[in-house]
Structure formats: structure tokens, C-alpha cells
Image (cartoon, rainbow, N blue to C red; front, top):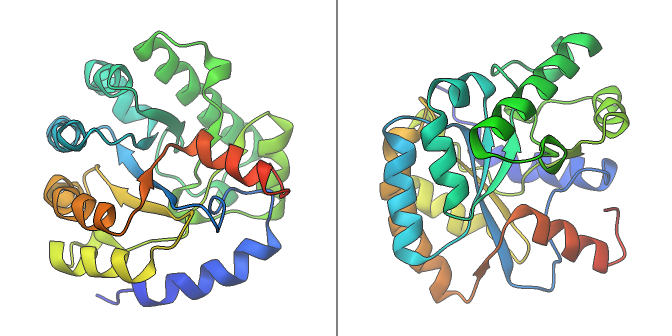
Length: 230
């Protein structure tokens, strides 16, 4: 299988300055970084991951599929009660540009409501959205803003979902990480098998480099303070 991880940094450099209304990273002069996890929650992999995050007292941000939250709301609730940030990845893992505006809005609002019900939150507090596979168009972004959602992207993508091995994923992250980085890993059915072990190795290495772990809203704030699009 062709692995695209070496190309993601170049894709990021092209897209980030073009689509500034997305959150791609935090302040480049602050050692704050965000660990983010897509495609969950999973009945086995997410609890394993939570134990590692709790071990290091690290906050993270989760972008969930509505169908997965619907199946295991109790695990979703445990993520929230452990003070992690929650975002939307769509109801199913469908690429946003291929959905009609009506289907896209239904997917987002439905997932927002499911997460809110599972975690006893107000739906309007769940506003961060990451498009599956990082795919979007200018029209997608316009619709997200129109519906009061905030598009969140990434700057470090080690392609863990193809399971290249824990050491490879760690090496890719450590090669790409910079101040303000948003790191994308997966705790769903693809890649989640290794996520707890990967993060258990990765966190102390990032701490040794002096990075502070924050959640997505803190990066929105740091980006705003730097005078960029928020």
C-alpha cells in the first residue's frame, strides 16, 4: 500500500496559507501543541488511550463519528469527564465535498446532538469540525461558517491508520512537530489498535523537547492573539 505520510507536510504548506479560515496550527512562537484523535470512540481502543492520557495528565481533543458515539455513549461520556475537548467528524466517515448541503448539515447537526446528549452538553458548545480525510472545498468552508461551525485541520499527519508500526509513527511525528503543531492520530477501527502504545512512547519524547499539550480552543485563542484568522 502506498503511504502518503512523507507528502503531508508539503500539502500542509500549500493549503495552510490559502485557507486561513481553518485552524491548521497554533502560534508558531509558542511551544504549545495539540494531540487530536479521529474516528472514535471505540469500545476497546479509546479506554486504553484514556489511561495513557491520564497517566501523563495530558489533555487531548477528539473528533468523533456520530454513529460511534451512538453505540457507546458511556465511553464518550468518560472522555468528556476526563476533561478532553470534543469535536465533530461527521455522522459517518463520509467525505464532505461529496455530500449535498442538506446531507452535510444533517450529518453535522445529528452528530452534534448525539455528543451533547451523551455528555450532557449544550449542542452549541460543540462547534469544532474536522472533515474526514481532510477533504474540503471553499464551498464546504463557507457552509461550515454559515452554520456556526469552526473547521479544524492539522499540521502533523503520521498516517497511523495504515499501521506502519509504533516506531515509524513516533519518528514521523518527531520529525514534523513544531511550535503550534496539531498532531492527528486515530482511536477508531483503523489505527486505533496501536494508539495507546504509540502515545505512551510519544508523550515523554515531546515533553523532553519542552512542548506543552493543549486543546483545540487554546490553539484557536493563540492564533487569534497572533493577529491571524480566528
